[in-house]
Amino acid sequence: MRHRLPLFLVKIIYYEYWPFWLFFLPLVPYWIYLSIKARSLTYFTAANPGIIHGGVFGESKIDILDKIDPRYRPTTLFFKLSATLPEVMSRIEQSDLKFPMIIKPDVGERGAEVEKVDNETELADYLKGSDQDFIIQEFVDFDIELGVLYHKLPISGTSNITSIVQKEFLGVTGDGASTIRELLSRNERAKLQMSIMEEKHGEHLEDVLPKGKYENLQPIGNHCLGTKFLSGQHLINSDLVAVFDQISENIGGFNFGRFDLKVSSIEDLYAGKNIKVMELNGVTSEPGHIYDPKYNLLRAYKDTMFSMKTSCKVSIENIKNGAKVTPFWTMFRLLRGHFSERPESQNLEGNVKTMMTK
Image 1 (cartoon, rainbow, N blue to C red):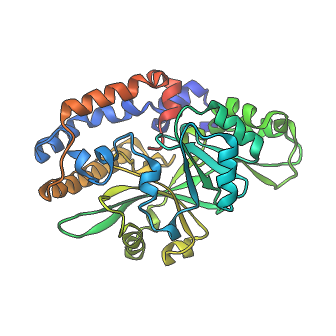
Image 2: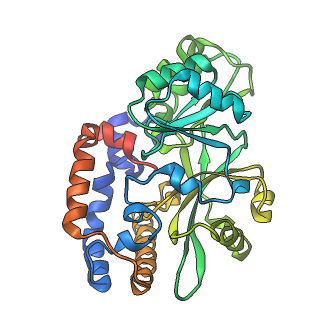
Image 3: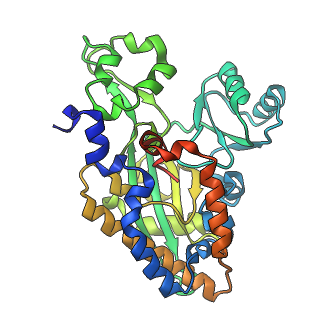
């Protein structure tokens, strides 16, 4: 049984826990092939002309969210790093936002520093530790969270959804006898998050939940925080593509990326209502469904290569339309500077934490 394996074996055997670079290393030859086809090593930076570097990294979340129709996004406020707590609270009150809220860096990736704050004290603590501009979002209390990888070809005019990932939050169901800590210790995915759980919940981990009662212990839907990614490929059909054609219609310069969203029900998803897009990520968006525990490595590589091929098609058409690519050496310097600022990415544990989702 998987949950009985030692944690170090879990991280080695199951590719969903591999460092980001290790998983993608075997795909370098395919990237080179696509680069030859596109006549540019950085062809992918043309995938989204309206997003800096196509959304490889460094894009502003608020700049992208502002392009999305307000009916599809939660109330979102942008703040400079210099904002004081009284200034933040004043704008929150003017916007009729209520606790709990989601707070995150305006420029960030893979779930880093994304937190749910339940009161003004927790908000103040976050601000004290923040070192960059940030956004505050309405907490959307919908049960269904999805990542939808969508693209539209600018010349041919065709569009499609190539990946849907359903997110199963980290939680436990009480048995009337075991503490929350004991329940967590019985699953390797939860055990990987014990230090975070102890910091977040403290003595609450010693509580015993009534039999059958479920408690969501981590409301942030990121793989690095214990969320299980499940394939939602069965949800893809022409009706759903039409919904995302509508959502993306007025997002200038966007052609390839993943919508991270919450929706009240699958019926509403197909109807295009009660959808709230928390983030829209660019060209380095992964097909998140490949991290479903039921997937195997070969199947994951096949689907990832298809996603890479799709982004290449989009980029080539944008280049034909006049979109510029980021020069290779410019991108090399940017990437070197970007990752040199993240020493945690040099070790296995850090890569587990930074693996998903861009």
